Image (cartoon, helix red, strand yellow):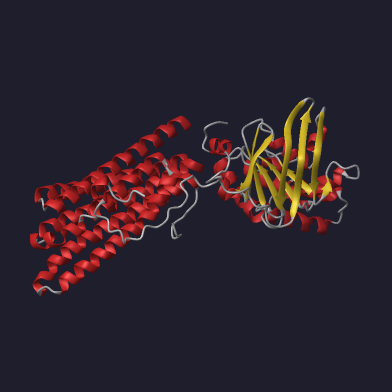
Amino acid sequence: MAVVSEKGAARVNPSVPVPSLPPSERPPPDPAPAPPAGRIHVAAEGFSVFYADVEAVRSVTLAIPQGRVTAIIGPSGCGKSTLLRAINRMNDLIPGCRVSGRLTLDGEDVYGPQIDVTALRQRVGMVFQKPNPFPKSVFDNVAFGPRIHGIRGRSQLEAVVERSLRRAALWGEVQDRLHENALGLSGGQQQRLCIARALAVQPELLLMDEPTSALDPIAASRIEDLIDELRGEYTVIIVTHNMQQAARVSDLTAFMYMGELVEFDATSRLFTSPAQARTQDYITGRFG
Amino acid sequence: MTAHFINLLDELLRRSLRMASAVEHMLAEACDAAKRLDGAMAQRIIDRDRDVDEEEVAIETETLRLMTLFQPMGADMRQLCTILKVNSDLERIADCAVNIAQRVYHVAPGVMEELGDDLEDFYPAVRRMLQDVLHAYAKVDVAGAQAIRAQDAVIDALYGQFIQKAVIRAAGQAPEMLAAYMDVLSIAKNLERIADHATNIAEDVIYLGTGRIVRHSIP
């Protein structure tokens, strides 16, 4: 160990204890992340999605815990929205789309023969990039799902609407405008209305496909606050191009690239010390 | 925007390394000034402290600006955090060099002759430690930084031995001579502090390279 220069070496008192050095090689990377704590809500095992011959999602294996917010990030065309939309079978509507491998919700095969797709979509709500309220009143937008599921009583519907709007942090702004057309709301309010509409059918899981990319920063911030409030009660999976947003709102982050899952880890670790070079390059803007 | 950020980050890192080089030079001169009791050299070191202080503030300002404007992540964020922390340690090392230079004015030549030989063990050890850690910082050499962390114990042991010897000598002296011994002890203390700051920098380099915070753990 070179403690002193050659000039001074002879002066070092031999009785000075010389501590043993740690191994000189660079420390090994951290082992694979521990499986997320808590009950697994959504699990993919070798799950692929094909559009005709194109494999848009390539043999993805990951386990998403219940009650946590999981972000999926990656460059355009990496398969993140396709993976998200596979969870409530939105991709079924695309001609030529097929899947292989296994995708389960609470252990139940989402693509199994027994599955009732309508019931699945009740359990798995979805919020899209552009707010898409129906051209109806605020009240009727939120009451739409519960009515389809057979709730008819006025007071019962009013209770569901109020609870859902409160949960979506919108009640205070619309309680006097419940019977006005929802298209008269601001973009941010419309998006929270869509979240309220999704919550009205009491889903267990919310899928959000870039829910703030069409909103101004203040409206986006309110959606992020809302996601934070939903944490614990709902499992939230959010696809976002905004990495700062993913870092702010999520507990876990999955990075996808060219259809593959490159890295899945605690958000705090993935954004500060990613294990994979491709993740590092993406989050620091070196590509994508 | 990314290319622009990378250029700014590179420039900031170069600036930090230039400051590191200036501080390393100050330490070398402080050691020489103490060895030779060279007052003119000591004054030059004291005069340079203001430049280091100004540069420290400028580097900190630019680091905070890049953090705010670009909101970097991953290795880029670690790099900026490391620059910020190293910056602070470099400024304190410069302060220690200035403290040594100030002692040079006060120390009684007789006492320096008496203890100077023992003190000379320190100069090359601390200078080498700082040189090595700044090299590890420039190269993001994690293994090198780990080795430097371990060196701190060697410096502490040297310091302990020196203190013991100096105190025994001072104990036999007349009370009016004690201040002179304190001057030499202060030089040793400042060298030991520099080794502590070098250890901090080594820990920052380990964080930079691995994302692990190793402070307060046994090297």
